[in-house]
Amino acid sequence: ETHTNGYSISSLNIPKVHFTKLFINGEFVDSVSGKTFETIDPRTEEKIADIAEGDKADVDLAVEAARAAFDHGPWPRMSGSERGKIMMKFVNLVEEHLEEIAALDALDVGKVLSHGKAREIPFAVNTLRYYAGATDKIHGKTLKLANQLQGYTLYEPIGVVGHIIPWNFPVGMFFFKIGPAMAAGCTMVVKPAEQSPLSALYCAHLAKLAGVPDGVINVITGYGPTAGAAISSHMDIDCVSFTGSTEVGRLIMQAAAMSNLKSVSLELGGKSPLIVFDDVDVDSAINLALMGGFANKGEYCVCSSRIFVQEGIYDEFVTKIASYTKGLTVGDPFDPSTMQGPQADKAQYEKVLSYIEHGKRQGATLLTGGNPCREKGYYIEPTIFTDVKDDMLIATEEIFGPVMCVFKFKTIEEAIARANSTSYGLAAGIATKDLNIANTVSRSIRAGIIWINCYLAFDADSPYGGYKMSGFGREFGMEALYKYLQVKSVVTPVHNSPW
Ligand code: ADP
Image 1: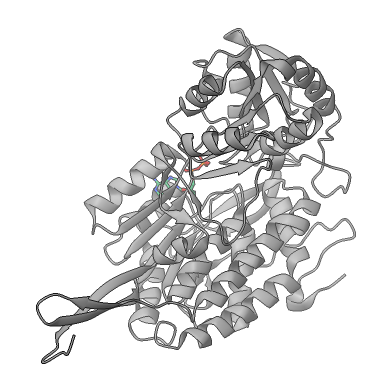
Image 2 (image 1 turned 180 degrees about the vertical axis):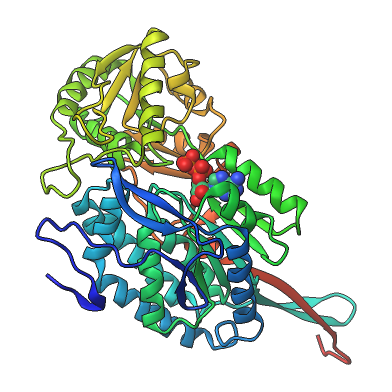
C-alpha cells in the first residue's frame, strides 16, 4: 500500500522510514559533522535507520534560521487568525496521516499501534487544534493607573523557543510543545529524544506541506549532552521547554542560568499515588489502577506507581488485581491483540528489571510478574509488589516501567500524609463515592493534576504540570500558551480625564 508523500507500509503495517535528516529552515539536511546514529527497534533489538546526528554546529544553524524567521519572517507578524488557518491545515494533515505517524512510534519505541491511533495521536491533533483556535484570542488588559496615567498590556511572542522532548510520547509531546509556541507566534528548535526521532521528522515534513513558513519549526535529532545542551546553553534562544528526567531538568536550568537566563519550564519525574477508598466498586478501582499503572508500559510521568488501598477492600483488591494483571497480553505492538509492547530501549529495560530485583531484595512481596518475557526485544511482564515499605527504593523512585506497588492504609489522614510523602508532585488519583473525601483529598495532595474516579483524563483545556521536584510551568490550556508570551506594559499620561 502506498500513501501520499511516497510513504508506504507493508501488510503488517510496519512503516518504511523516509525522513532521517535534520530539518532546518524548511529543508532536510545532513548534520554538519556528517555523523549519524542508529535508532533501534525495541521489538527486535535491530537497527531501524541511521539518523543524522546533530550537535552544537547544527543547533547554531537551526537557531539562526529560527531567529531570522522570528525577526524578519511572516509568522510572528501575521494576524492570529492567519496563523490559526495555517495551523488548522497542519492539524488536518496530521489527522490524514494518523496511521503512518502511529506506526512510526510503534516501530521506534514499541507503542501499541492501536493505542496510538485511537488515543495519543487524536489527542495530539486535538491539542494542536485547540491552539490553532487560540491564535486570535490573545489579548492584554487596559489599565487605569494612578497619577493621571493609563496603560495597556501587550502580549508578545517570547522569541525563539527550544523544545527538548522525551521518548515516551514522541508525537504527543511534539505537538503539546509546538502547539502553544506556534500559536504565540514563536519560532522554534525541537530536539526529539535520541530513542524516538522518526515521528517528529515526519511531522516537520507535514508542517512544510501545510504552509508553515521555513524556519518556524526546526528539528534537530541527536543526543542530550550535545544537541540538547547546545539548546539549553544557547545565547540566542529565549525560552526552553523541557520534559524528561529530574536530573536532566536540573542541568537544563543550570545551563539556562549560566548562559543568557532564558526562561525555563520543566515537566519532570513523578511517583503518583492512586488512593482507593473502601466505599468504591473494587472492579472499577482496579480498572483505574491497571490503566494508571500499566498504560504505555508504565512509561508515563503520571504513572500511578503507588496504589494506596483502604483496609476494608485491600484483600479483595489484591487478589483480583493479580488475576487481571496475569491476563494482560504483552507482545508485538503491531499485533491488534497486544495490550503492552516492549519497553522503549535497552537502558530502560535494564533499569526496570534492576528495580524489580531491588524490590525483591529489600523484602517486598512479588504479587505477580517480575520477569522479562520473550527471547528477543525489551518485553517485561506487568509487575505488582505488595508488602512494600514506604521508604523502599521501588516506593520512592520513578521506575518508568510496568511496576506498581500496592499499599494498605486505614484513615484518610494517613492516606494523605503517605501520598504526599514524595519529592514529586505531578498527579494523583482518588477513587471514592464520598464527595467530602474527594474534596478533602484533592485539596490536600500537592500535585498538578488530580483525577477523581478517573485516571489519565487529559484534555487540551486542562493545564497540567508539576509541584515540588516534578518541575514548574504547565502544559495544555491557556497556561501553556502564556509560557511563550512576554507581557509588556505600555503607559501614557491622560490629561484632563473626567474620571
Ligand atoms: P530519560 O531519562 O527518560 O531518557 P532524559 O531526561 O534523559 O529522559 O531525556 C529527555 C530529553 O532530554 C531527551 O531529548 C534527551 O536527549 C535530553 N537530554 C539528555 N541530557 C541532556 C542534557 N544534558 N542537556 C539537554 N538535554 C538533555
